[in-house]
Length: 396
Image 1 (cartoon, rainbow, N blue to C red):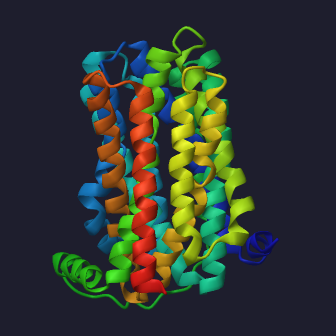
Image 2 (tube, rainbow, N blue to C red; image 1 turned 30 degrees about the vertical axis):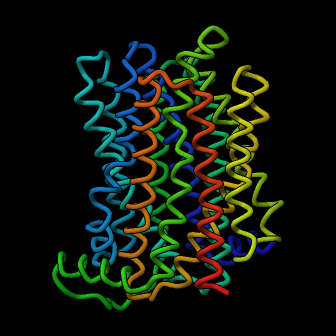
């Protein structure tokens, strides 16, 4: 109920939420479209893993610079500018038609995610400036639920859409939705924020880095938040569609169903777990995440039975993401919002990029997809131990 009240009473948050939903929903059509295209072209495993990794690499390489860009530019102009570049990058995907065009595919994936990262950081930094701590927590939960709902609907509908209309139609549909997102963002009415940050780009980057190193709570929270980046299952899901379940349905439908079931649990989880969330219980959520992934590993032998495991693999994810992200904002000085959130995304995406590439490497090394998934579950159980130690030392 509080979430709905915030959306009704705060026009800017409502506009950001609607634009976020539309943009994220459309992005799933391009994402499924790219991986379906790779399957249709019979692309080797390294291409699939690299494509997944490139979705995260821009945030790793440019996050500190992006943080300064966010702090030095007007939020509305930055949001509209980045989403416009994103629109162009998506439209150009229609010209990728063979493995000879991989260079273009990699460039477009990389460039789109560069500006998408700036967009996301600008959005989160803007919300932190517009809202008090209580409303900010609600806004972050809305952000997580919004992402989960758009992810669920996008993954489910994108699979069917591509199956019936093809990959190029998916890219064009995403382009159209991005255009709608731009028109919605034009209605933002933001206050004139006082520019509190001045200085040279690289000096500001260095200052933000040293601030994080000195603030041990923020540093550990960034690392703990980054563990959730290991839930980047794109490579794993694509390999399952390409090898384990290739005789059941088309690749697009398999990926759509798997991601939709997982995303459904991303939505359900917060509504059940949020009433219990506090620092002392977060370690149990990490362990629950690990056990859920282990359940998925054990059920992968059957496409339909694996849906049970996927529910477990996604049930705790949204709550973990939202809680750790809000904790970072809570313990961060307002002056450093943009840069700290940029470094947060950088480490998070570094974890995602690593796991995407590492899964491909392990599969090429003849490790089964079940064992790869189980290994991921064990990592989260260890992360639960990490949170417990962190909580005892810094938060008690």
